[in-house]
Image (cartoon, rainbow, N blue to C red):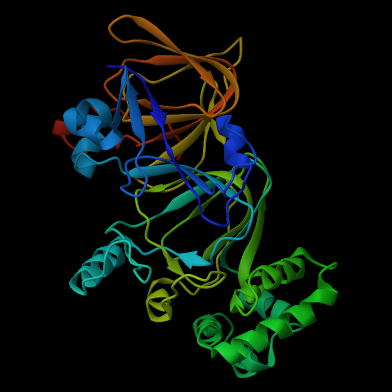
Length: 418
């Protein structure tokens, strides 16, 4: 077994940065086109290539050759010889669309329904590009702004009061009267305004929020969004959703059905292996309001900011409930190198700062140099490995399950908090 270097796909979405990913990878910066996401995984839309000697092969091909050795017996049995997560660097220079992701059953049903309708997987009006759910965690590398889940109803009413457009007066009164039970109706009315009313309403929000921008980042973001997406009712989202600023190293988790948007910043994103997105504004792309309404959880949400907690020497992890993935950060020092567990599932490593080396025993004692932007696949069948130097490495892994039967007695409990 070897540790393999990865070559990964960069997605050139229009909201991406021209510098962040290029700088991390040591490529010419600014890049000629926006670079939004660096994908590490097996998703068909952007599969990683494994560097194996003089050859480069798709990661899934390597997994197919030796699924237990690469994924681990535990992960291979649970996920059918498929890497269950997608590991990313996300670099937002402009706000992303407001969106939510379906739950597992919703994804299976939606994917089958659109297949029966004969929609191509890459059709622009397609909502379900696979049959998987998409819980995710975002961890800030720079100060990172985002929207995540509905605010308390009373706060929403107070924030909307000075900026609510005339076209939404009736829905706003209903929201005041019914509080949280009025979220769905207000959002549905907002999303189904005619194009003419939507344009006038967005302009009205801009006019009303402008004088308040210096008082609160909530109104400042309304102005920013109105300038970036005129005629889009997503301009009201900073009043509806929790506005979050993550400092570098902080993270937040996003479960299925939670309305959210990433506004600005660079972060590590880790999610179940899916590209299912139901959009709800701040986008010129397809918006399916009925399907979105069926997926979104219209309820007040308290957001927990996740700080990394110690999981072992030179390693800290983020506490989140996903079964498909865990996220930890490794920061070795001269006095304390990182030494991996000997029993684990497949791992991916990404160096975001500094440099050092990875040492392990394959057919012989081997080592790999590591610098910023390098990424690696660590097969489950490899013995323990060591990372040392002055560097920061983010690790995506499949957590080991607690043994539940005699057949799983050999599976040990992973100490990761996530």
